[in-house]
Image 1 (cartoon, rainbow, N blue to C red):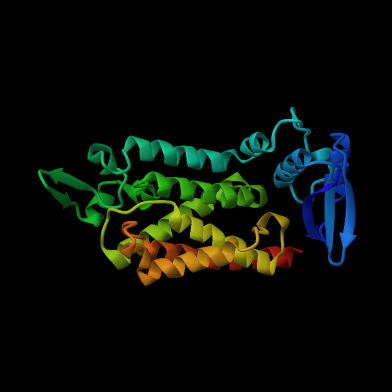
Image 2: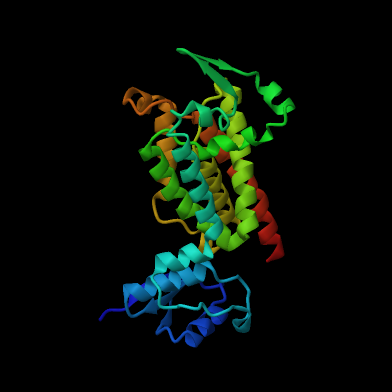
Length: 286
């Protein structure tokens, strides 16, 4: 049986504590060096999934005895990731619940509480409440809640998959509160950008947050390389190309509905700025 590559990391990253943990868990493995990287090998892909999930939950710089052994180290990788990335899973669960309760925006009795601007439907017309009036009434959640609303299954599925991919990386590296804080920050700024440039209060989705998380991982990784922020090849290029395609208006012509371009751009710029700050601080600490 050919060995399977589980992790590929920079040489300067100290793997001694993690390797010691694998020994305690009796996970068969070996480490080799290839130019400027170190590669951790395991006997099969089932081991590789578990090792990757365990690494994502492993605190950087922790000593061997500081890390508890999972109660069920043999469980499948996805369920282990679900357990150690529960903040990511919680945001996704809340997004699913809100979207289903709103019936993808068609249940106005629920949806009007979630949108950035409150509205009421009378007959064939919708009457929007002035934005500042809602804030003065104490409805501050509207600054964030549109990120939980999705208008179709494809929108929900795509955003959910990308949030799972990016969110769990940040949750591992920055902690659960760090992920929650960045999610709320990018949600706030992308919602404000969309409302400022488009003027419409009926929009939603995690897309602005996703571009924020992408920009954060991208710039942070450039300044302070971390295995957690090493995105799969082509992900960054693909998402930037998709952003340009949306900005060009081609997606609207194909009938995919209105795209919140301002939220995407606002989220990306906010993520890059935050990644610049976080990466610079991490580099100074090193």
